[in-house]
Length: 453
Image 1 (tube, rainbow, N blue to C red):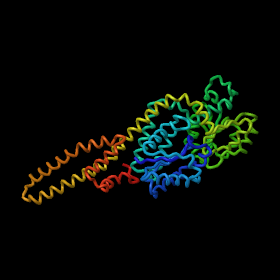
Image 2 (cartoon, rainbow, N blue to C red; image 1 turned 90 degrees about the horizontal axis):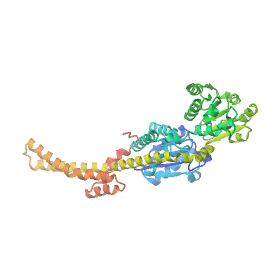
Image 3 (cartoon, helix red, strand yellow; image 1 turned 45 degrees about the vertical axis):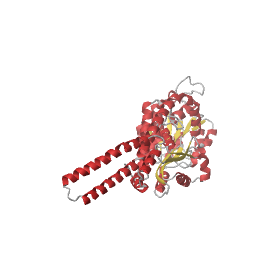
Image 4 (cartoon, rainbow, N blue to C red; image 1 turned 90 degrees about the vertical axis):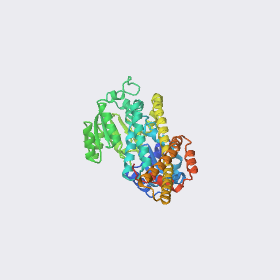
């Protein structure tokens, strides 16, 4: 394997740093376009979410690829590499595969076990395919990863262990904003759904996270209002939850009426400024307003928390809430980790077996060439042989060669699948004096960008 991942996430960087490197799909596509002219990166997939930015690559050389990947991330985020470096992590070969499998399984998420990351990785892979930045190596890797993610959620209870960001956020806000006057510390064991049932929420944005928020709230009995810059998108989301859509110009008026605001637009600047919320507070007659900001960079001016009656939860506070609940998920996490360990081992074994294939093909090609050469010499020495005898001799020689090569080639594939299997491939090359150029000629098509076998 020659897979490398470089990136930063909520585990390695503060929210402020993640805000600085937040990328949209257009920026991710530009990174993928740059891969076509890279010297050390052969294939790439960019995973950009609200709390991670990662570049996965099939690489020709490790150090050269690290330099290129770092330069790409710095260039397209606009953050100098020296400022990014303290937060970057790099994984290679099996550690890179293990990291990806942990990510798609929800083990590396801010909210452990959440399923949204699986769709985000699928979309990142689709974008890379569309851009022509993937080939055989990453196609096989990401197809395997998506299968592992599905298996983790199908075979364990990790879904129940890890709550979505929306659920965690609403559980944080509910005691303060419940319309029937329940106060923090006086909820009598009621769930956040019980507390907010019958309330009204304004969802700003119509992307996947906004859709998740809208459906979660609607299931809890909350009336949902959707605002988005594209009216058609707002209408579509609102109709899916029996809510109503409004233009962005209606946001100030809606803030007078709703109990909670959830914003996740993907914009690069503040969408809900301090002045907007301040004016709404003066018209709310003391009614509390809960704000759940799920965007990176922040959609809502963080200073609104200073306003009377405003309760704000963002990605930073949600991370703290998840950490406090971490002990509950331990058993489910271990179940998923066991699956990931098995899958990484199986993937690595399969890749090691594939690695020896070009050598085996080169050996058999060499043997075929020897057979052809000897049969040609035989025909020159025995020109009077009839066709039947010539065919029988040819078949016999080929059977002998096939039988002699069968055991060593089968066995070397088995041995190559072991962790130290590279030495057996090397031994096969040396024993038969195989030309490295012949082996590389066989292997080269597998590394061709755009090969989707």
